[in-house]
Image (cartoon, rainbow, N blue to C red; front, side, top):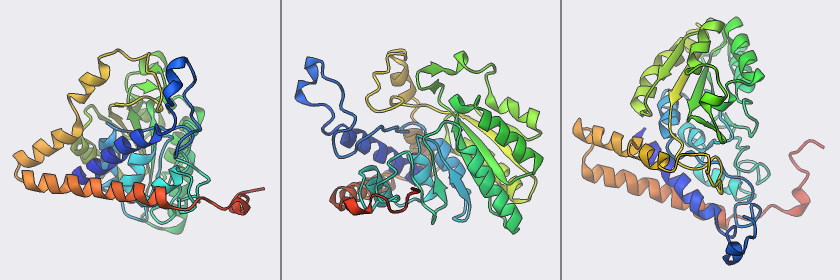
Length: 325
């Protein structure tokens, strides 16, 4: 989990830098707009630095045959589930070697091999996860599905419909609410009537589990029993994790809605160095091993971005392939 968190963080920080290429021209000071369509990675970009524990703590329990459905902020889930870094990066660059041949972009990553998908629509992860869970049940498999969603999606109708259906049919699905306190620019307290989304689980007849700290081991410890419960055929669970979003809702977000010192204070409790300290204190890792893991993560990410940059663009005549017309 520590190694995966390193990989996720370095991927996100690298993308934060690469994404800005060409979008901030020298004359930006003259009042010209941020050019979202410019540079090697066009379009919006939602990064998950700080939220790594939610992804790795859950996905560490999963098998290749299990399904994960992510959100519009999907990279940490994809990496934790084993989606190839190079093809994922290439998709964000719009290249032919990307997971969707460059047609989906960063919010529409699909990898049938690792059984990962995501969507830019808020709350849209839960229905397809229920579908995957229903398929597993119909086929008599012990596969499970995991739907990640944010606290900002918790009030969407599709979320409640999915919770109800999963409980009614005892589907092998785990719902994980990633509570970073901000739904774009709206604080949770202004949009949700209760402090814990997990408390709503009781209304659907399923366990509701709360993780109050942004800690991978804490997530791992509660995800294991929930996943085991689903595999046994005992039905769904709802887990809510309090996590931290270090970057804006999207890259280029001025974040005027956040207190000025909020992110600096959150970073004082960064889960990655905190896990490193714990591993070393308990004798599971030394300084040399830590340096080795950091170097490995950086190398993998560098290779992925090099692959993406050097990959060919899609051919114009392929524009209508693999799409519904």
